[in-house]
Length: 344
Ligand code: DAH
Image (cartoon, rainbow, N blue to C red):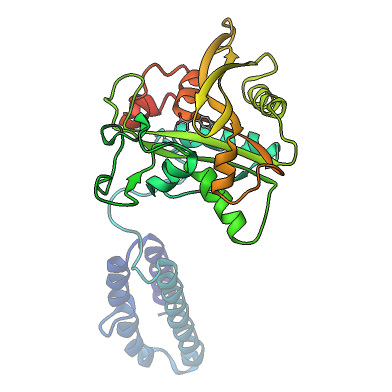
């Protein structure tokens, strides 16, 4: 009987080793520990053992039983709740991963350029101000000293929301960010404040232009306004020059050409001489308009032009982005063709 118990023990443990899943484990349990299993079958044999050997053999029987039960519990725990290894291919965590190129998202080029511009002007002390895109003609024209018969107010050239022929103060999609000059001056004076005011305002503007390589019915401008005591044209030009050098590099140059805008006097258009592609010859590109804020504009906003003076400027962001990144067609900025977006 002793031999038989030894064999039962070693076979049991050995076979248990080979068990790999819950199904095999259950089969093993039935074979060895079940009610008709080998252990149970061994028990009645004890009565045939000579009396003097009984205690020892009985002890051994118990030992084998505990061994097998213990090993069974361990195995069960090792296979886990889920009942062991899943069928099918095993997972080899040392295998190299599948090489897949993940495309990281990034900001649109206009968003990046806008952020760069804000950054450069912030270093010169300009704060970002915002105004509504759905405006009224009061802020888009009237307070900017643009008279009722001015061609810029022609309904053909603007996205009016209300009919200007019947509404006293028709709403419209703003056609320029100069509106924000008025909004900010009103805001400052309305809350009991006074200049200095030093803001930039990047944002969308809308004009019913026919779309082509250089025109879009929606584009972005950046407006600047600085009002303080004794602000001069020299401050304007040096601010633009500072900006040009900070953004395009130390070789950049700025040129002002006399012009006319209703909201500035004197007015100028400004060009920057910049190298578009690295290593190429710098060339002049027309960027925008600027000038000294017209006294009528200051007065309309409650600012005394005898005490305060200021300059303003405005330019198109697309123009600048296209120049800086060599983009030939403005439509590329809005089509969202993935092949374009991946390049810039
Ligand atoms: N608002 C003008 C435009 O859309 C640009 C401009 C010109 C803005 C002169 C200014 C300025 O602030 O002083 O064409």
